[in-house]
Image (tube, rainbow, N blue to C red; front, side, top):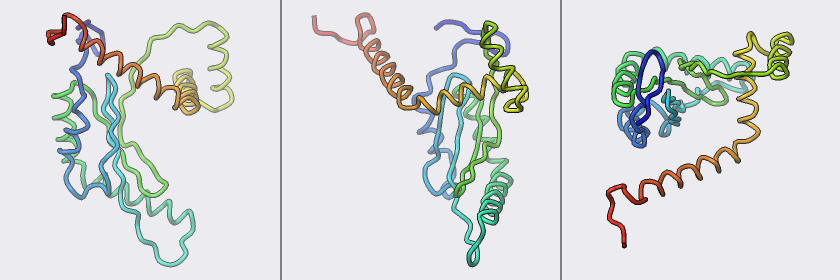
Length: 188
């Protein structure tokens, strides 16, 4: 494994191929209406669960629905805080990644906490001018926020392509595991 620097000197985190299953087993029954969505990268594990929608009397306005959904999410956050912290601590020890929690209810989605990883990059003046324009226009508070906004925008418009790329990278990783010198028997 190669070393990488993050919060001091640290090696690559261990593989997390089984992390989603581990989280699913650790989350108490009844917390969510369906298995939580779990997204894992080299720095963070994000767990987002769907909550039951609140039942409102009569014809509720969109504002009332949004307020009720936000209230349901907030109450879930408060009610589960201690248990979520314990699960997160176990995950962080096991997989050496930060853990973030969130919830969805109806059309409302809230990420309670998440890790912000510094990314080193060198931008030339035209790229910096794009970021500065976004800051000056009030789209972002800083160059860092502007860069994050750009990455999200590109991600939204290229999800299909990125998904295909990730699948191809997974296939390459599988081929490497089965390749010569991996200890598995090969037909010679």
